[in-house]
Image 1 (tube, one colour):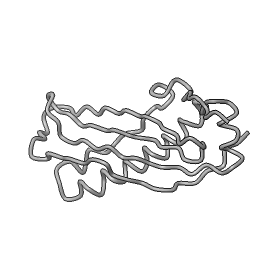
Image 2: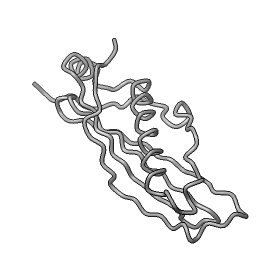
Image 3: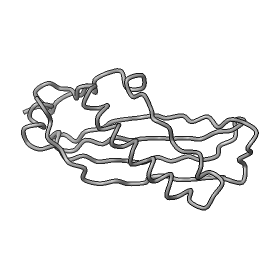
Image 4: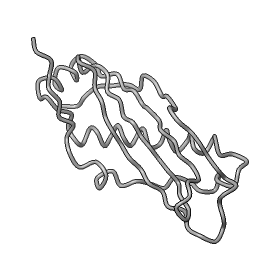
Length: 139
């Protein structure tokens, strides 16, 4: 079954950048982390995305962005019945969140040395490997 949802809110929780540290000589490494949360009625799912850019172990950029998704009634009933959110759906939400973060980074780094360092595609199959399992509320 397809889980009907919509994007409800985007929140930049943290953002810091240090473009003056960037050198053209050494490679920039990019790390990503994803986390998920759900409210007790399974009507709201959160995807937390953390991205950091480093060069020679020095932090160039860090951001943490929260994307909130409203799940329609049919979808929330399915999620509650299963006691989990399927890994495929998590990857889909993370794909949306990654695109959102890419845009935030691009906008906030405009006119800085970090702007050409674009967040590359992320293989979410390698990053998100398991369902999000939770304990459904007791009736």
